[in-house]
Structures are given as C-alpha cells and as structure tokens.
Length: 86
Image (tube, rainbow, N blue to C red; front, top):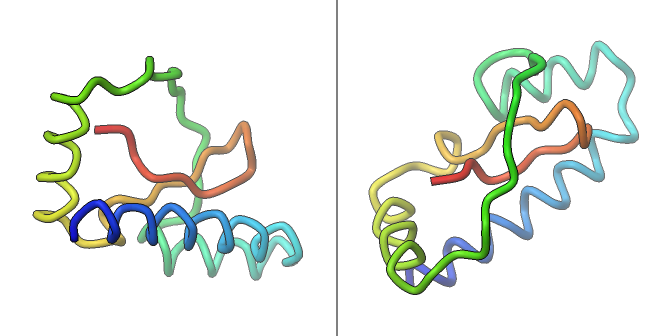
C-alpha cells in the first residue's frame, strides 16, 4: 500500500513539474508556495545511488509517516518538483 502511494506521488510530482513549466513567473511562485510551502530557492543536491532493499523499506516507512507536501521539493537545476531524498 505504501509503495503504491509513493509511486502515485512520483507520478503527481512529474505532472506538477510539467504544469509548472507552462506558467508565468508569478504563477510559478504561487504554485511553489502551495506545493512546497515557500517560493523555490536554489539548493544544492546530490545524486543518490540505487536504493538497496533495506533503504527502500526505510523510505516506505518514511512515506507512511509523512504527508505529501512534506515529501515534495523543487529542484532548481532541473526546474521541476521532485520527491525529497530520504
């Protein structure tokens, strides 16, 4: 069940990113505030290695404990929303 929720969240984030790409700056700022609770800011990030089974299980438990808005962030480099790394 949690895995389905996580997959649905990933699909939603992808669609929100596509929508965001069509908006004007003022509209993007409003959408960012609605989604991540603030206007998007430039933040550093790193690529994660492929998840192991243990880390996937931990991530699934985290998904169950957090709300969707707490799990989404804006990636300035990609100009897209993404699910936060665990």
